[in-house]
Image 1: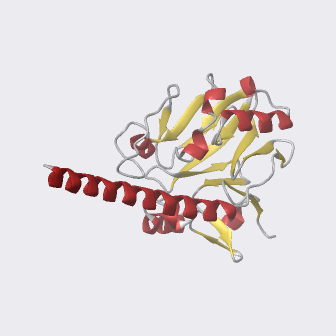
Image 2: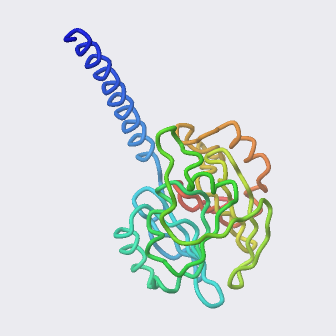
Image 3: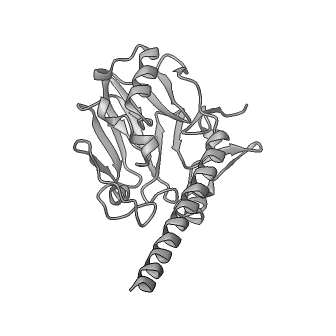
Length: 240
């Protein structure tokens, strides 16, 4: 009996050890990658667009006819609210939230905007209803309010802002970019600028990098836009 107990404890110890090693590797990789991220500081890009910096990620706010539309929602409510106050925009003025995807660093402050209409691509719903997770052991459940599902290549107008949805799977199944107006391409975690050219996102954070590479082939030429608004690589002005 004692021998059997020792074997069981040994196996459990091995499993715990592997979990600890795996967690340590993830943390090291995570810290290394986030250190290389260069989000824009909180502030106005012009009279109608603002960036919000929440640690290592950006959200972006666009002025509409009656209120404001926001793309993504940062990491934490406390920090996001502090940054939002720097812009002079009030929580209640955010009428719409477009999500490029549903990773925790893009939805963390949604709770600040209970009245906002939330939109995400239909293929991203599996990431928040327990169907699919970035790992087998982490399949988060949506804890916010109702949301609306977008179709690939939809074009819609929200509060006077014309928006084109570009489904770009790879980072997650429903990752999407948004063309807003004629001047802005908002990319989420779909591309970064490295060595003077656009590249796919950090591979260690993608669910399927080959899919993302293929998705990026179908994006419009970035030079067609005045600004590329990335989640972790800041604001890229084309031609600079």
